[in-house]
Amino acid sequence: MKKLSRRDMLKLMGAGAGSAALASTGIPFDTKLVGVVKAQDTVTLDVIARQPEYLNLQRQIWDIFERENPGIKINLFAVNENEYAALQARIAGGYIPHIATTPTTTTDAPVEAYSLYYNLSELSDEDFPWWDRWTFDIKNAFTDIYGVPGPRSLEIMAPWTCTWHWHQDLMEEAGLDPRSVTTWEEFQALIEQGTEWAKSRSDVDHFLDLGWHPLVALVWTNAWALAFPEGQQENQNACWRGEKKFNDEDSPWRPVFQWLKDSYDKGILPESWWTREWEADFEASYIAKKSVMVFHGPWLWDKALAADPTITQLGLPATPPAAGQDTWVQYLAAIDTFRWYALIDGVQDLPEWPQVKKAWAWWHSPAVVKMRAEGIGSPVVYTLDEPLELEGAAQWEGVRKDIDIPGGVFENTKFVDPANWAETQAGAYIIPGSTNTWDHNGNASAIFGELMEGKKSVQDVLDWAQANFEASYKFPEA
Image 1 (spheres, rainbow, N blue to C red):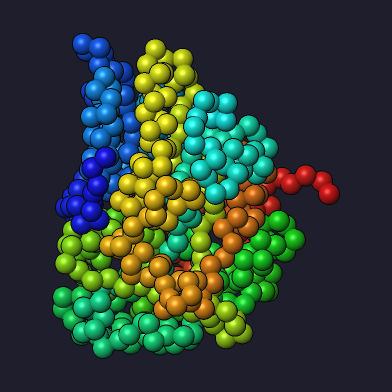
Image 2: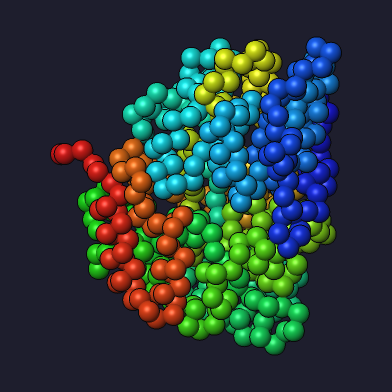
């Protein structure tokens, strides 16, 4: 197999990641997604790329498969978030992509975590050679949480994390060093200073930038809460188990919403940030270096580097401890048991199933997993034959390799336990059609906006969350 360097991989990601909004990389649904095509004993399989920004990179990996399997062609395509509904409608009409991804082919409704299995194949009975490579019990994890047969999808990447990150040259021009920060209060002082500096620059729109995405309500608030003693993982879990209330006086999210409100009042956050488009406004501003600092997962690191491989980005763990919190704690997403690569129910009945089965096993083989992980720049929950080489992976190099590692810059910062998020476990008890606690795909942005504008208090927002929780989950009787 051809070895791709990290720099080669970044080039393959393409300059499109730096555009104001990622150009549509999905193939028009009315013309090109035609399913299997046979010509002169060649079978063409429709395969969905993990994310649009990794389309070209994954194309190069699948090219290796095609060279090794000359009778099989891979029609690789990506689907942007605004195209999910069209693809899902096509699947409802009978179209079956041969290898799918769950974010694109399953509804993003609030009941997603529980209902994902409805149109996905149950995988455990397949003649699949790599089950023992996962570092956790992948065959039973889905069933253990949701109580239905699984697994329904496979993920080899380690849980992702979100941190602060910035353009180092702009930060130096501002005369600030976020890595000198040791407390939440010091961090607050730094972003206030940075905001004042940005106001003096005609070429910088925002020091700290933010836009709206469901992740802000669903994940960012959980991550930020870890700065505060009341926001620690066990306290968040108590709310998701119904042992405490989201609107209690010591709610894990009370200091988060108060911080957001205070930051907005001070002009730190962009005006009407909850109405700003995630890619077209927020991400594009950072990529164009109109914004200095953001809070994000690994994806924007890569998009910015793909747009300009000469930039230098550094990061800071998400939550320097606030007063009363002794340990610097870093968010990790839950171990993923219901996302990414999947097989749509019915694909096993297609005449090309033998070719699908071969491609599916190849995509999850050790050598290919290594290439995929190095391309994205992520650790894995999978035992490889050779060690990962993540040098040059933007978030990894910029911050993650130094967190909770002896000798690292942030060796005393501790990751949360990604296997211990009660929010994920509660997904088994969600009521179909309910909003979920944060209504992240519904009215959340408006609620956040009303808080920022003073139309709702922090208590109002927490009362709203508690009411949503009570209406969205039905736990078994004790």
